[in-house]
Length: 467
Ligand code: 6PG
Image (cartoon, rainbow, N blue to C red; front, side, top):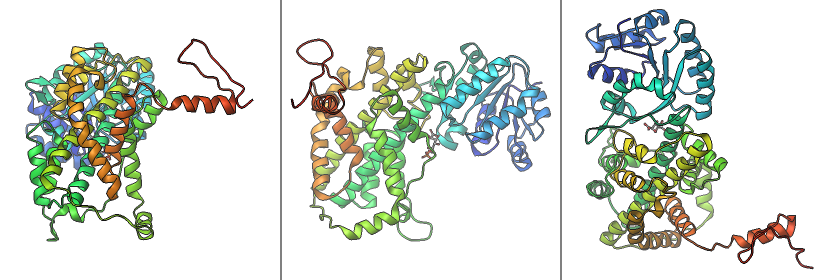
């Protein structure tokens, strides 16, 4: 019982995370059903007093200091329950299990309640940053018991990414708060990815940018206000040569995007909450449309499409940068709005400033913009939507005209810009004092006596229409 930290699941993420723990001066013990993975970790770990591992659960449990801190980095779903059941008979009251996967938040609530009865503390902790992040410093989003978090805190703060010295991890809230925040992080991730890919389409079709020019453009953008992990890797993607000698790799990749579900869950739950996140919704739909490749090929043959008119390259690049910045703001605004509402609905008591802060480094959606978002929520804790913050009013105002122009261009020239046009319509609708939905209320009352309210007097009204 000498090791500080236990980790079940020695895949790439698990292996990297445990090496990161050891780099930071903690001793760690791993466990995996696969003896090869156990062997690999022991070999990589070097000194067995610092890192060790076993296939045997009993040996694993015995190796850990109490209260035991056991992180699971196993695939979300049934496997998590199976691992929990295998550990349970050997655990002592007060021990801590941390699920580091992308578990669905209601599964985390169920597991937390079940384990609480047995005196075990359960955490759902989203971990973002991929394999490299796990090794060098991820952003970690833990939710669970505040008291138990004190035992985990020193380790998580040491291994997490740092933004100007501040750790990208904090206690987020009770129960599934951590998994919920990670889910919305992924929803935002889907939105930003869709937007960067639309802008790429526009730049190559309207401005005829080559891969080399795309590389330079995204690299330059990454030096400015669009600085972000996704823009950075996008610039690097355009440079990558194909290993089979067929030009640039990006041009040989099949245009069908896969998904594991977290973006879809964000949209589904936003619908349940009644919070609009259309830019995230469309990013999910676009992955679905992309998957219909053979249908798309057939349909392409059935319809004519305009040949895009050329756009001045320099002007296009400036406008595209404005548009991407605008749409990034809108995507974060939608995600944060969802978090604010979910916090009330599920009693998470989330602090949006803290969330924006722990997203500033380590995670996939890290971006310079997040420092401004953190400041906006710090200036006004009750900010309902980023679009209502003075700082962002100015930023949005100065970029929206470029969005209007590019969306109009895309519509006229048959270039689909669903994320961008969605961000724009969200903005136009959200900032309209009056929308035409008075007509919908009239229709509802007409055919179903669903009643309506009035602008000029209080009360609930119903009309016998058409009489
Ligand atoms: C992260 C990512 C990660 C996610 C992948 C794949 O924060 O490190 O969000 O958790 O699983 O990005 O997601 P999709 O397969 O759904 O695209």
